[in-house]
Picture 1 (cartoon, one colour):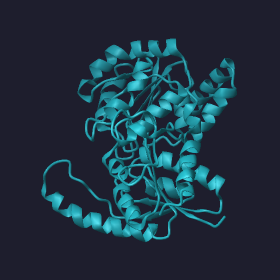
Picture 2 (cartoon, helix red, strand yellow):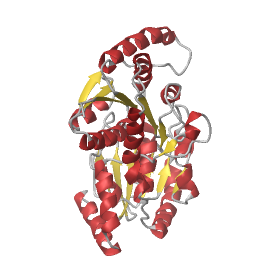
Picture 3 (cartoon, one colour):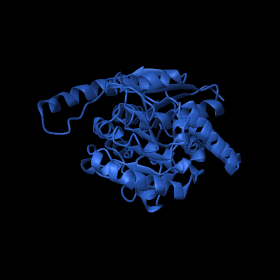
Length: 367
């Protein structure tokens, strides 16, 4: 088989990049002779994650779509033309484009369409984003992390959401471990984080850049619960100042080893991004989700299936206050105790299902 060029588009946040990386790793393992190239923008997290994973990254101009009427709208056509042209330069000799959503995908889909490059799209959110809705006009090779109720993605292949390697390894370990071994692994994870007490662990994060709204509530709460047997592990985000840690509060700018953090946790407080919901569900954790109050509303529905299973609560950001958290944190920890870890292994096959869909797309020979 000749060497092929496979392009991956999905940037901005870890929610778009991590699934793409999982599929790229499997593709490279299956087809080591193929060339893999990622498309991204200079402002996205892909500039860090993609090179660290050992893949080539080509940068294009980010197309910024204003959320309200403003003078910035007049800049959109020009930046879109530049981005499509730059995408064409990368895709001109490509055999396949994978799209995982985000700003980088819209120009990539338009370029691939004009060049007749086959497209495969994976949508992680329960409510597809605008870029992937655009891409669905140009391909029937659609995959989703969870069922979508209407539109072209209602007919998509349900694959689950590709997990990061550290989460996959942790799930595999859980699959082969008895209850005592799993508990020992949890104790070790707490020690690795510097927690040597018998405290309950609350893991808090607001995405790769952090959430000032969530951070503010935690800052106003943590000293008031200092006497309770609770340790907060808090990822404040790379864009925010790092508070000082103490005996019951451990802060990080960004948690690289999320598997250890999840393993140590008794309760998760986070945004309800698709990746986070998938990881919480896969590892059988209990979570309080605070959906991001902007965007196209996808975060408000991502956690619905976990709420139905009794493994999560969803609270609007406006209701998430220090007083609310003080009143409810003990009951949420008690609920978590009753549930214990109940992992779900379905997402372990997600990357393989997406690769199989792409293989079928390539086998049709359409360009």
